[in-house]
Image 1 (tube, one colour):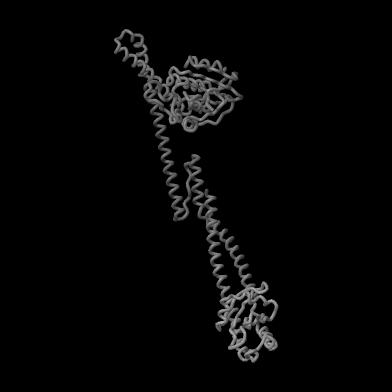
Image 2 (cartoon, one colour):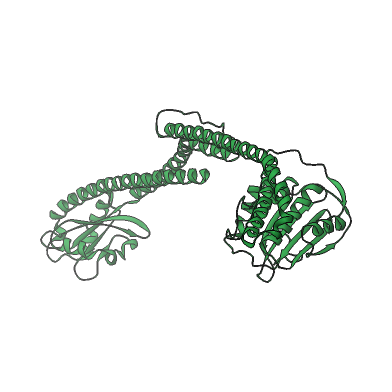
Length: 491
């Protein structure tokens, strides 16, 4: 963006310089043109007046003089010697006398306004071309009787001077434009240096470097920009530190609470276990309360266990070393333990080396989610081992969730339907964190046919696939199809 802005700035300066040079050069050219032509006109008119003075005393212009007498008088030769390139004489009969063949079409080139001015007894002039040469024609009224005279003066030197001036102005304009471009580039580079530094600093901050600062230069607006950037960076760094401290305190608090609850919770679980066999002998109302108590104690124990697991995952505990497992037997054991009614299919079965604890936790949580939130639905677990990539999908044909809820499924404590009992809102978040720790990808999408949900785990059996923490993955990947060809995944 800075390069584009610098280019626009340089282009703007060049345009301004070019327009200014064009205006100044054009105005200067017009002034010089006017001055040179004015000098030529003044000189030509002066010569014409002198010629007219001589014409007034010449007997050849007496009444009745014809063109032969005029030609024989030698006046034309004297006029040419005085600077006139040629003369043509209008006798008023439509057949003018010309001093050379080049002037034969001169009468046709005369401006009617010039002819009218001369016929009125005034001296007039006109710039035109005769024989492809620029000339100045000065007309003079005939004294008393006799023809009208039009004297031709060369304007070639004036035009040549103007042509040279145009070349000089064009070269100067080009030079000024180039110089303006260089100066504009230097100015733009100097002016935009703090902006470029701010941009680079912002990129470094976006990459996580909160120590970046911009040294302020000067007390102008750009210096104020550097100061404002540094203040923002310092404030952001402080906020991040405070946020990290707050999150660390929250994690410690959750871990401490979970640990503190384990002892009384163990006693409650034991007491509930003692109470459970005797619920049948209690009155119906008391029995209902007792059943709810036993159920809630179980849910509370499950919640505390999951809080402890979240705490362990947040502390970035070392990932267990991968170990070899028989894929089909391993998945069959997990399915039988968590959702015996689910259907299991395995393609490409062979021993693989994986983090069996993490994989078991992911598949178990996905099955628990299907059993809790899609009771009575048909659940299918499909595994496909192709090369070094293992793809596992868990699909149910339950009620599913709407599009707005899909990206939130991996958030902690999120429940698509809070009115439903069962579950803690942590199972999918824990599964996502385990998947990320294994370098795997866990995503969710609507099941084929529009009913239910398909969860897909794509993990390496050797090496690693791009992964991240569970929070980042839930925001970026939830609802995206990773392997469209896998069973149960909608295309």
